[in-house]
Image (cartoon, rainbow, N blue to C red; front, side, top):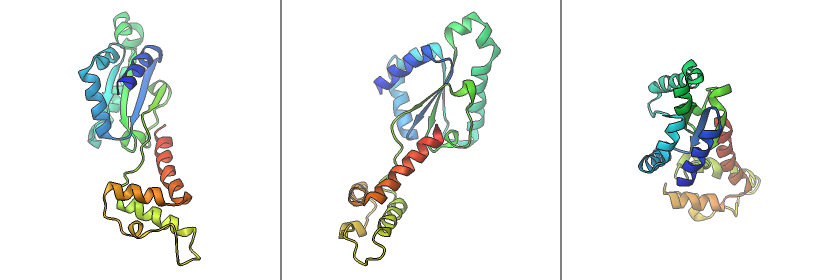
Length: 191
């Protein structure tokens, strides 16, 4: 978290206008923000750029986005020497799969730099996802009634994370590829 904060400290002094940072979840974004707040990192970032956070409530997203845009394109930030020394744009902390990562075009100055923190893999405790992976895995041996890739523990899933990881480890290339493609689709959608 500290290294990420130090990287962002360097980027805010080099990148003009807007920087968007995507996190894999709201929980992780909150932990990173709290870590930066307790150290001097957030203060160093806010000396250069104003920091916005994606709200969990979808009703507040439009106002945050408008304020982010206004901060970047405000005429005072371009002409005022005081503002130029303190704020030369903004940083938007967003979450992959949330409102700001889908269907919103952060063009030109609003997205001069995009940072993807981690990879947003789906939870291995998602029963629906694991059943879909097991179904895709079954396609490769659809002509055969016996599928050696499925063990007894593979067929019966209790909803725990370790059981989900076990299924993901034992699945074939197709199942793993599907799981990775879901992650990469979310990354591409955000970028």
